[in-house]
Amino acid sequence: MKYVLALDQGTTSSRAILFDRAGAVCAVAQKEFPQIFPKPGWVEHDPDAIWSSQFEVMQAVLDQVSAVPTDIASIGITNQRETTLVWDRKTGRPIHNAIVWQDRRTAPLCDALKRKGAAGLIRKKTGLVVDAYFSGTKLSWLLKNVPGARAKAKRGDLVFGTVDTWLVWNLTGGRVHITDPSNASRTMLYNLRTGDWDDELLELFQIPRRMLPQIGSSSEVYGHTMVGSVPVPVAGIAGDQQAALFGQVCHRPGMVKNTYGTGCFLLMHTGDRPMMSRNNLLTTVAWKIGGRTEFALEGSVFIAGAVVQWLRDGLGILRTSAEVESVAASVPDNGGVYLVPAFAGLGAPHWDAYARGLLAGVTRGTTAGHLARAALEGIAYQVRDVLAAMQRDSGIRLRELRVDGGASVNNFLMQFQSDILGTPVVRPKVAETTALGAAYLAGLAVGFWSDRKEIAAQWNMDRRFEPAMKAKQRDQMVAGWERALARAKGWIQP
Image 1 (cartoon, rainbow, N blue to C red):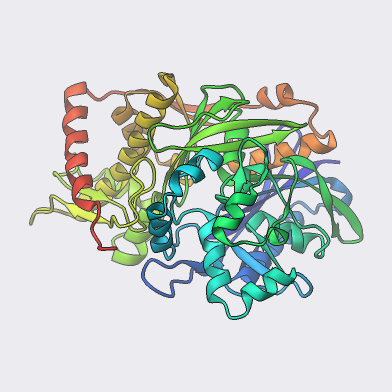
Image 2 (image 1 turned 180 degrees about the vertical axis):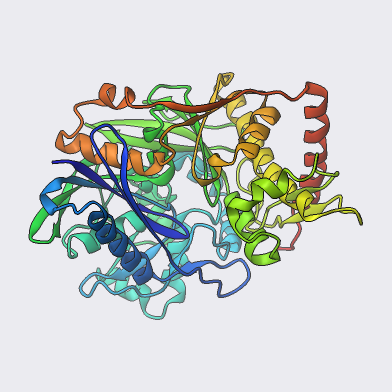
Protein backbone atom coordinates (compact mmCIF):
# COMPACT_ATOMS: atom_id res chain seq x y z
CA MET A 1 0.00 0.00 0.00
CA LYS A 2 1.31 3.42 -1.00
CA TYR A 3 -0.74 6.07 0.78
CA VAL A 4 -2.77 7.19 3.74
CA LEU A 5 -5.71 9.44 2.83
CA ALA A 6 -6.43 12.37 5.13
CA LEU A 7 -9.84 14.08 5.03
CA ASP A 8 -9.46 17.63 6.34
CA GLN A 9 -12.94 19.08 6.83
CA GLY A 10 -12.53 22.78 7.64
CA THR A 11 -14.74 25.76 8.29
CA THR A 12 -14.72 27.15 4.76
CA SER A 13 -13.61 24.20 2.66
CA SER A 14 -13.18 20.43 2.55
CA ARG A 15 -9.83 19.00 1.53
CA ALA A 16 -8.33 15.61 0.88
CA ILE A 17 -4.60 14.91 0.92
CA LEU A 18 -2.63 11.76 0.09
CA PHE A 19 0.56 11.16 2.11
CA ASP A 20 3.23 8.57 1.39
CA ARG A 21 5.39 6.69 3.89
CA ALA A 22 7.84 9.61 4.12
CA GLY A 23 5.00 11.90 5.23
CA ALA A 24 5.22 13.79 1.93
CA VAL A 25 2.18 15.30 0.20
CA CYS A 26 1.45 13.38 -3.00
CA ALA A 27 -1.85 14.98 -4.02
CA VAL A 28 -4.27 17.63 -2.74
CA ALA A 29 -7.85 18.47 -3.65
CA GLN A 30 -9.94 21.25 -2.10
CA LYS A 31 -13.49 22.54 -2.47
CA GLU A 32 -15.08 25.51 -0.75
CA PHE A 33 -18.70 25.36 0.39
CA PRO A 34 -21.20 28.11 1.30
CA GLN A 35 -21.25 29.93 4.62
CA ILE A 36 -24.77 30.68 5.89
CA PHE A 37 -25.46 33.74 8.06
CA PRO A 38 -29.19 33.71 8.98
CA LYS A 39 -28.86 36.53 11.54
CA PRO A 40 -26.06 38.70 12.92
CA GLY A 41 -23.79 36.48 15.00
CA TRP A 42 -25.31 33.26 13.59
CA VAL A 43 -23.19 30.96 11.38
CA GLU A 44 -24.45 27.74 9.79
CA HIS A 45 -23.40 25.11 7.26
CA ASP A 46 -25.51 22.79 5.15
CA PRO A 47 -24.60 19.26 6.40
CA ASP A 48 -25.11 17.87 2.91
CA ALA A 49 -22.65 20.43 1.52
CA ILE A 50 -20.08 19.34 4.13
CA TRP A 51 -20.44 15.70 3.11
CA SER A 52 -20.74 16.18 -0.66
CA SER A 53 -17.71 18.50 -0.82
CA GLN A 54 -15.67 16.06 1.28
CA PHE A 55 -16.71 13.08 -0.86
CA GLU A 56 -15.94 15.00 -4.05
CA VAL A 57 -12.38 15.90 -3.03
CA MET A 58 -11.78 12.36 -1.77
CA GLN A 59 -12.53 11.07 -5.26
CA ALA A 60 -10.56 13.86 -6.92
CA VAL A 61 -7.38 13.29 -4.97
CA LEU A 62 -7.33 9.60 -5.87
CA ASP A 63 -7.81 10.47 -9.54
CA GLN A 64 -4.84 12.89 -9.47
CA VAL A 65 -2.34 10.06 -8.93
CA SER A 66 -4.43 7.35 -10.62
CA ALA A 67 -4.62 5.55 -7.27
CA VAL A 68 -6.53 2.31 -7.07
CA PRO A 69 -8.39 1.41 -3.87
CA THR A 70 -5.76 -1.13 -2.82
CA ASP A 71 -3.17 1.71 -2.74
CA ILE A 72 -4.90 3.21 0.31
CA ALA A 73 -3.83 1.79 3.68
CA SER A 74 -6.35 3.77 5.73
CA ILE A 75 -8.30 7.01 6.04
CA GLY A 76 -7.83 9.62 8.76
CA ILE A 77 -10.27 12.42 9.57
CA THR A 78 -9.56 15.85 11.01
CA ASN A 79 -12.31 18.37 11.36
CA GLN A 80 -13.56 21.77 12.39
CA ARG A 81 -14.46 21.20 16.02
CA GLU A 82 -17.52 22.20 18.07
CA THR A 83 -19.70 22.53 14.96
CA THR A 84 -22.90 20.73 15.90
CA LEU A 85 -25.14 18.46 13.84
CA VAL A 86 -28.26 16.46 14.66
CA TRP A 87 -29.77 13.92 12.27
CA ASP A 88 -32.40 11.20 12.15
CA ARG A 89 -31.01 7.84 13.22
CA LYS A 90 -33.05 5.88 10.64
CA THR A 91 -32.93 8.12 7.58
CA GLY A 92 -29.60 9.90 8.17
CA ARG A 93 -31.27 13.22 7.30
CA PRO A 94 -30.26 16.33 9.28
CA ILE A 95 -33.02 18.10 11.18
CA HIS A 96 -31.37 21.54 10.80
CA ASN A 97 -28.30 23.18 9.37
CA ALA A 98 -25.08 22.56 11.30
CA ILE A 99 -24.45 25.27 13.88
CA VAL A 100 -20.84 26.36 13.36
CA TRP A 101 -18.28 26.84 16.13
CA GLN A 102 -18.22 30.60 15.37
CA ASP A 103 -21.96 30.95 16.03
CA ARG A 104 -22.90 33.17 19.00
CA ARG A 105 -26.66 32.51 19.27
CA THR A 106 -26.30 30.67 22.58
CA ALA A 107 -24.45 33.47 24.41
CA PRO A 108 -27.63 34.26 26.44
CA LEU A 109 -27.87 30.58 27.46
CA CYS A 110 -24.24 30.74 28.60
CA ASP A 111 -25.06 33.84 30.66
CA ALA A 112 -27.94 31.95 32.27
CA LEU A 113 -25.64 29.04 33.15
CA LYS A 114 -23.21 31.45 34.79
CA ARG A 115 -26.02 33.06 36.80
CA LYS A 116 -27.10 29.59 37.86
CA GLY A 117 -23.62 29.01 39.26
CA ALA A 118 -22.82 26.19 36.84
CA ALA A 119 -19.57 27.64 35.47
CA GLY A 120 -17.42 26.15 38.23
CA LEU A 121 -18.90 22.67 37.81
CA ILE A 122 -18.44 22.78 34.04
CA ARG A 123 -14.88 24.05 34.37
CA LYS A 124 -13.93 21.37 36.90
CA LYS A 125 -15.35 18.48 34.88
CA THR A 126 -14.58 19.56 31.32
CA GLY A 127 -11.65 21.98 31.52
CA LEU A 128 -13.69 24.46 29.47
CA VAL A 129 -15.09 27.90 30.16
CA VAL A 130 -18.81 28.49 29.64
CA ASP A 131 -19.01 29.96 26.14
CA ALA A 132 -21.18 29.72 23.03
CA TYR A 133 -18.12 28.34 21.22
CA PHE A 134 -18.71 24.79 22.45
CA SER A 135 -21.17 22.16 21.26
CA GLY A 136 -23.27 21.59 24.38
CA THR A 137 -25.29 24.80 24.23
CA LYS A 138 -25.70 24.47 20.45
CA LEU A 139 -27.18 21.01 20.89
CA SER A 140 -29.51 22.35 23.62
CA TRP A 141 -30.63 25.11 21.26
CA LEU A 142 -31.48 22.61 18.50
CA LEU A 143 -33.50 20.41 20.85
CA LYS A 144 -35.44 23.44 22.07
CA ASN A 145 -35.99 25.27 18.79
CA VAL A 146 -36.49 22.60 16.12
CA PRO A 147 -40.15 21.50 16.34
CA GLY A 148 -40.51 17.99 17.72
CA ALA A 149 -36.77 17.52 18.22
CA ARG A 150 -36.81 16.97 21.97
CA ALA A 151 -39.52 14.31 21.83
CA LYS A 152 -37.73 12.52 18.98
CA ALA A 153 -34.44 12.65 20.90
CA LYS A 154 -36.04 11.12 23.99
CA ARG A 155 -37.40 8.28 21.84
CA GLY A 156 -33.90 7.64 20.54
CA ASP A 157 -34.73 8.71 16.98
CA LEU A 158 -32.11 11.49 16.77
CA VAL A 159 -28.34 11.36 16.98
CA PHE A 160 -25.79 14.09 17.65
CA GLY A 161 -22.34 14.48 16.25
CA THR A 162 -19.56 16.90 15.56
CA VAL A 163 -18.25 16.92 11.99
CA ASP A 164 -15.99 13.89 12.48
CA THR A 165 -18.99 11.82 13.58
CA TRP A 166 -21.05 13.03 10.62
CA LEU A 167 -18.29 12.03 8.17
CA VAL A 168 -17.77 8.57 9.69
CA TRP A 169 -21.55 7.99 9.67
CA ASN A 170 -21.69 8.78 5.95
CA LEU A 171 -18.48 6.93 5.06
CA THR A 172 -19.78 3.76 6.74
CA GLY A 173 -23.33 4.01 5.46
CA GLY A 174 -24.74 4.81 8.89
CA ARG A 175 -23.21 1.74 10.54
CA VAL A 176 -20.82 3.60 12.86
CA HIS A 177 -21.73 6.42 15.28
CA ILE A 178 -18.45 7.39 16.94
CA THR A 179 -16.16 10.24 17.94
CA ASP A 180 -12.75 10.45 19.55
CA PRO A 181 -11.76 12.09 22.87
CA SER A 182 -10.18 15.15 21.23
CA ASN A 183 -13.56 16.08 19.74
CA ALA A 184 -15.63 14.86 22.69
CA SER A 185 -13.63 17.09 25.02
CA ARG A 186 -14.90 20.16 23.11
CA THR A 187 -18.58 19.62 23.83
CA MET A 188 -18.93 20.70 27.51
CA LEU A 189 -20.43 17.22 28.03
CA TYR A 190 -17.22 15.15 28.45
CA ASN A 191 -15.56 14.46 31.80
CA LEU A 192 -11.78 14.76 31.47
CA ARG A 193 -11.15 12.45 34.41
CA THR A 194 -13.54 9.61 33.57
CA GLY A 195 -13.02 9.84 29.81
CA ASP A 196 -16.75 9.52 29.22
CA TRP A 197 -19.91 11.56 28.81
CA ASP A 198 -20.95 13.04 32.15
CA ASP A 199 -24.50 12.32 33.34
CA GLU A 200 -24.67 15.40 35.58
CA LEU A 201 -23.77 17.66 32.66
CA LEU A 202 -26.21 15.90 30.34
CA GLU A 203 -28.95 16.60 32.87
CA LEU A 204 -27.85 20.23 33.16
CA PHE A 205 -28.09 20.67 29.38
CA GLN A 206 -31.20 18.43 29.10
CA ILE A 207 -29.58 16.15 26.54
CA PRO A 208 -30.54 12.45 26.30
CA ARG A 209 -27.44 10.26 26.55
CA ARG A 210 -28.68 7.95 23.80
CA MET A 211 -28.14 10.76 21.26
CA LEU A 212 -24.40 10.80 21.84
CA PRO A 213 -21.80 8.85 19.88
CA GLN A 214 -19.56 6.17 21.29
CA ILE A 215 -16.15 7.57 22.31
CA GLY A 216 -13.33 5.55 20.73
CA SER A 217 -9.64 6.37 20.66
CA SER A 218 -7.91 8.69 18.19
CA SER A 219 -6.12 5.84 16.40
CA GLU A 220 -8.05 2.64 15.74
CA VAL A 221 -10.13 1.02 13.00
CA TYR A 222 -13.68 2.33 13.52
CA GLY A 223 -15.19 0.79 10.42
CA HIS A 224 -14.71 0.60 6.66
CA THR A 225 -15.79 2.65 3.67
CA MET A 226 -16.10 1.26 0.17
CA VAL A 227 -13.64 2.74 -2.31
CA GLY A 228 -14.83 1.16 -5.50
CA SER A 229 -15.38 -2.43 -4.43
CA VAL A 230 -12.61 -2.40 -1.80
CA PRO A 231 -13.30 -1.82 1.92
CA VAL A 232 -10.79 0.73 3.25
CA PRO A 233 -10.42 1.20 7.04
CA VAL A 234 -11.36 4.52 8.61
CA ALA A 235 -8.74 4.49 11.34
CA GLY A 236 -7.92 7.93 12.73
CA ILE A 237 -9.89 10.87 14.14
CA ALA A 238 -8.69 14.08 15.75
CA GLY A 239 -10.05 17.60 15.97
CA ASP A 240 -8.12 19.88 13.67
CA GLN A 241 -5.98 21.54 16.33
CA GLN A 242 -5.05 18.34 18.12
CA ALA A 243 -4.24 16.78 14.75
CA ALA A 244 -1.91 19.69 14.01
CA LEU A 245 -0.21 19.22 17.41
CA PHE A 246 0.39 15.57 16.49
CA GLY A 247 1.51 16.45 12.96
CA GLN A 248 3.98 19.00 14.35
CA VAL A 249 5.45 16.17 16.45
CA CYS A 250 4.71 18.05 19.69
CA HIS A 251 4.67 14.75 21.54
CA ARG A 252 6.48 15.93 24.69
CA PRO A 253 5.21 18.17 27.52
CA GLY A 254 6.05 21.84 27.00
CA MET A 255 6.07 21.74 23.18
CA VAL A 256 3.77 24.34 21.57
CA LYS A 257 2.28 24.85 18.11
CA ASN A 258 0.04 27.52 16.64
CA THR A 259 -2.21 26.96 13.63
CA TYR A 260 -3.15 30.01 11.56
CA GLY A 261 -6.43 29.11 9.91
CA THR A 262 -9.83 30.78 9.96
CA GLY A 263 -9.03 31.23 13.63
CA CYS A 264 -5.78 30.78 15.55
CA PHE A 265 -5.25 27.88 17.89
CA LEU A 266 -2.30 27.63 20.24
CA LEU A 267 -1.76 24.26 21.95
CA MET A 268 0.81 23.16 24.52
CA HIS A 269 1.31 19.47 25.25
CA THR A 270 1.00 18.95 29.02
CA GLY A 271 1.47 15.18 29.42
CA ASP A 272 -0.87 12.45 30.63
CA ARG A 273 -2.69 14.51 33.25
CA PRO A 274 -5.02 17.44 32.60
CA MET A 275 -3.53 20.80 33.64
CA MET A 276 -6.29 23.14 34.78
CA SER A 277 -5.78 26.74 33.68
CA ARG A 278 -5.82 29.70 36.06
CA ASN A 279 -5.65 32.18 33.16
CA ASN A 280 -8.77 31.46 31.11
CA LEU A 281 -7.26 28.88 28.82
CA LEU A 282 -8.87 25.55 28.01
CA THR A 283 -7.83 22.10 29.13
CA THR A 284 -8.44 19.63 26.35
CA VAL A 285 -7.64 16.08 25.31
CA ALA A 286 -4.78 16.05 22.81
CA TRP A 287 -5.35 12.44 21.70
CA LYS A 288 -5.85 8.92 22.98
CA ILE A 289 -3.62 6.19 21.56
CA GLY A 290 -3.33 2.64 22.81
CA GLY A 291 -5.33 3.28 25.96
CA ARG A 292 -3.24 6.31 26.98
CA THR A 293 -4.85 9.74 26.97
CA GLU A 294 -2.64 12.83 26.64
CA PHE A 295 -3.71 16.40 27.29
CA ALA A 296 -3.04 19.96 26.19
CA LEU A 297 -3.63 23.56 27.20
CA GLU A 298 -5.32 25.52 24.45
CA GLY A 299 -5.98 29.11 23.61
CA SER A 300 -8.48 29.76 20.84
CA VAL A 301 -8.57 32.95 18.77
CA PHE A 302 -11.83 33.12 16.84
CA ILE A 303 -10.77 35.33 13.94
CA ALA A 304 -7.36 35.08 12.24
CA GLY A 305 -7.28 34.26 8.53
CA ALA A 306 -10.95 35.27 8.41
CA VAL A 307 -9.89 38.91 8.84
CA VAL A 308 -7.98 38.68 5.55
CA GLN A 309 -11.08 37.22 3.87
CA TRP A 310 -12.99 40.22 5.23
CA LEU A 311 -10.47 42.64 3.71
CA ARG A 312 -10.92 40.80 0.39
CA ASP A 313 -14.67 40.13 0.35
CA GLY A 314 -16.10 42.70 2.76
CA LEU A 315 -14.00 45.76 1.96
CA GLY A 316 -12.71 44.81 -1.49
CA ILE A 317 -9.19 46.15 -0.85
CA LEU A 318 -7.56 42.84 -1.85
CA ARG A 319 -8.06 40.83 -5.02
CA THR A 320 -6.77 37.64 -3.41
CA SER A 321 -5.95 36.67 0.17
CA ALA A 322 -2.30 36.06 -0.79
CA GLU A 323 -2.02 39.72 -1.80
CA VAL A 324 -2.26 40.86 1.85
CA GLU A 325 1.47 40.37 2.44
CA SER A 326 2.61 42.71 -0.32
CA VAL A 327 -0.07 45.30 0.52
CA ALA A 328 0.95 45.25 4.20
CA ALA A 329 4.61 45.59 3.23
CA SER A 330 3.83 48.67 1.10
CA VAL A 331 3.93 50.86 4.24
CA PRO A 332 6.83 51.10 6.72
CA ASP A 333 4.63 50.76 9.82
CA ASN A 334 0.99 50.59 10.88
CA GLY A 335 0.61 54.38 10.98
CA GLY A 336 -0.88 54.09 14.46
CA VAL A 337 -3.75 51.92 13.18
CA TYR A 338 -4.92 48.89 15.17
CA LEU A 339 -7.54 46.37 14.07
CA VAL A 340 -9.15 44.19 16.75
CA PRO A 341 -10.88 41.44 14.73
CA ALA A 342 -13.49 40.56 17.35
CA PHE A 343 -16.11 39.87 14.67
CA ALA A 344 -17.44 36.88 16.65
CA GLY A 345 -16.49 38.09 20.11
CA LEU A 346 -13.16 37.40 21.78
CA GLY A 347 -11.84 33.95 22.63
CA ALA A 348 -9.00 33.12 25.00
CA PRO A 349 -7.93 34.55 27.32
CA HIS A 350 -10.67 37.23 27.30
CA TRP A 351 -13.86 35.20 26.58
CA ASP A 352 -16.04 38.17 25.78
CA ALA A 353 -19.04 37.16 23.65
CA TYR A 354 -20.10 40.81 23.45
CA ALA A 355 -16.86 42.24 22.08
CA ARG A 356 -16.96 43.34 18.44
CA GLY A 357 -14.44 44.32 15.81
CA LEU A 358 -12.74 47.69 16.20
CA LEU A 359 -10.59 49.78 13.88
CA ALA A 360 -8.71 52.43 15.88
CA GLY A 361 -6.21 55.16 15.11
CA VAL A 362 -7.51 55.94 11.63
CA THR A 363 -6.50 59.31 10.13
CA ARG A 364 -6.92 60.98 6.76
CA GLY A 365 -3.55 59.50 5.83
CA THR A 366 -4.62 55.91 6.50
CA THR A 367 -4.29 53.68 3.40
CA ALA A 368 -5.17 50.16 2.38
CA GLY A 369 -1.61 49.24 3.31
CA HIS A 370 -2.14 50.38 6.88
CA LEU A 371 -5.37 48.37 7.11
CA ALA A 372 -3.69 45.26 5.73
CA ARG A 373 -0.77 45.68 8.11
CA ALA A 374 -3.06 46.27 11.11
CA ALA A 375 -5.06 43.16 10.19
CA LEU A 376 -1.97 40.93 10.17
CA GLU A 377 -0.59 42.54 13.30
CA GLY A 378 -3.97 41.99 15.01
CA ILE A 379 -3.61 38.25 14.42
CA ALA A 380 -0.15 38.24 16.02
CA TYR A 381 -1.24 40.30 19.04
CA GLN A 382 -4.03 37.85 19.79
CA VAL A 383 -1.54 34.98 19.69
CA ARG A 384 0.72 36.91 22.06
CA ASP A 385 -2.13 37.33 24.55
CA VAL A 386 -2.78 33.58 24.55
CA LEU A 387 0.88 32.63 24.82
CA ALA A 388 1.40 34.96 27.78
CA ALA A 389 -1.46 33.21 29.60
CA MET A 390 -0.07 29.80 28.65
CA GLN A 391 3.35 30.58 30.06
CA ARG A 392 1.81 31.82 33.31
CA ASP A 393 -0.23 28.61 33.64
CA SER A 394 2.58 26.18 32.86
CA GLY A 395 5.55 28.03 34.30
CA ILE A 396 7.37 27.13 31.08
CA ARG A 397 9.25 29.80 29.13
CA LEU A 398 8.69 28.99 25.48
CA ARG A 399 11.87 28.22 23.55
CA GLU A 400 10.21 28.24 20.12
CA LEU A 401 6.76 28.33 18.54
CA ARG A 402 6.04 25.80 15.79
CA VAL A 403 3.60 27.21 13.25
CA ASP A 404 1.37 25.85 10.50
CA GLY A 405 -1.85 26.62 8.66
CA GLY A 406 -2.58 28.73 5.61
CA ALA A 407 -1.32 32.06 6.95
CA SER A 408 1.97 30.57 8.16
CA VAL A 409 3.29 30.96 4.60
CA ASN A 410 3.04 34.75 5.11
CA ASN A 411 6.63 35.76 5.91
CA PHE A 412 5.63 39.24 7.06
CA LEU A 413 3.20 37.80 9.61
CA MET A 414 5.66 35.17 10.84
CA GLN A 415 8.43 37.74 11.34
CA PHE A 416 6.09 40.12 13.15
CA GLN A 417 4.86 37.21 15.29
CA SER A 418 8.44 36.45 16.32
CA ASP A 419 9.14 40.13 16.98
CA ILE A 420 6.08 40.72 19.14
CA LEU A 421 6.66 37.50 21.12
CA GLY A 422 10.42 37.91 21.46
CA THR A 423 10.55 34.18 20.62
CA PRO A 424 11.74 32.24 17.54
CA VAL A 425 8.99 31.03 15.20
CA VAL A 426 9.67 27.81 13.29
CA ARG A 427 7.82 26.76 10.14
CA PRO A 428 8.04 23.12 8.98
CA LYS A 429 8.66 21.99 5.40
CA VAL A 430 5.28 20.23 5.35
CA ALA A 431 2.78 23.00 6.14
CA GLU A 432 -0.17 20.58 5.96
CA THR A 433 0.34 19.49 9.55
CA THR A 434 -3.37 19.21 10.41
CA ALA A 435 -4.01 16.68 7.67
CA LEU A 436 -0.65 15.05 8.33
CA GLY A 437 -1.57 14.50 11.98
CA ALA A 438 -4.78 12.75 10.95
CA ALA A 439 -2.83 10.65 8.46
CA TYR A 440 -0.28 9.67 11.11
CA LEU A 441 -3.03 8.60 13.52
CA ALA A 442 -4.74 6.52 10.82
CA GLY A 443 -1.45 5.05 9.62
CA LEU A 444 -0.33 4.04 13.12
CA ALA A 445 -3.59 2.12 13.59
CA VAL A 446 -2.88 -0.16 10.62
CA GLY A 447 0.92 -0.37 10.85
CA PHE A 448 1.66 1.93 7.90
CA TRP A 449 4.03 3.69 10.31
CA SER A 450 5.54 1.60 13.08
CA ASP A 451 5.66 4.09 15.96
CA ARG A 452 6.02 7.75 16.95
CA LYS A 453 9.81 7.66 16.62
CA GLU A 454 9.47 6.92 12.91
CA ILE A 455 7.01 9.81 12.62
CA ALA A 456 9.19 12.26 14.58
CA ALA A 457 12.12 11.59 12.28
CA GLN A 458 10.08 12.93 9.34
CA TRP A 459 9.66 16.47 10.75
CA ASN A 460 11.89 19.00 8.97
CA MET A 461 12.21 22.79 9.27
CA ASP A 462 11.51 25.11 6.36
CA ARG A 463 12.43 28.45 7.97
CA ARG A 464 13.20 29.89 11.40
CA PHE A 465 12.18 33.48 12.17
CA GLU A 466 14.26 35.17 14.88
CA PRO A 467 12.99 38.22 16.84
CA ALA A 468 14.57 41.46 15.61
CA MET A 469 12.40 44.13 17.28
CA LYS A 470 13.82 46.12 20.20
CA ALA A 471 12.06 45.68 23.53
CA LYS A 472 11.08 49.36 23.78
CA GLN A 473 9.33 49.33 20.41
CA ARG A 474 7.63 46.03 21.27
CA ASP A 475 6.30 47.45 24.54
CA GLN A 476 4.98 50.57 22.79
CA MET A 477 3.18 48.55 20.15
CA VAL A 478 1.66 46.13 22.69
CA ALA A 479 0.43 49.11 24.73
CA GLY A 480 -1.40 50.44 21.66
CA TRP A 481 -2.97 47.05 21.07
CA GLU A 482 -4.15 46.84 24.67
CA ARG A 483 -5.83 50.27 24.42
CA ALA A 484 -7.69 49.21 21.28
CA LEU A 485 -8.58 45.85 22.83
CA ALA A 486 -10.08 47.54 25.89
CA ARG A 487 -12.38 49.59 23.66
CA ALA A 488 -13.57 46.53 21.70
CA LYS A 489 -14.64 44.61 24.81
CA GLY A 490 -18.29 44.56 25.83
CA TRP A 491 -19.27 46.57 22.75
CA ILE A 492 -22.82 45.24 22.39
CA GLN A 493 -25.33 44.94 25.18
CA PRO A 494 -26.43 41.43 26.26
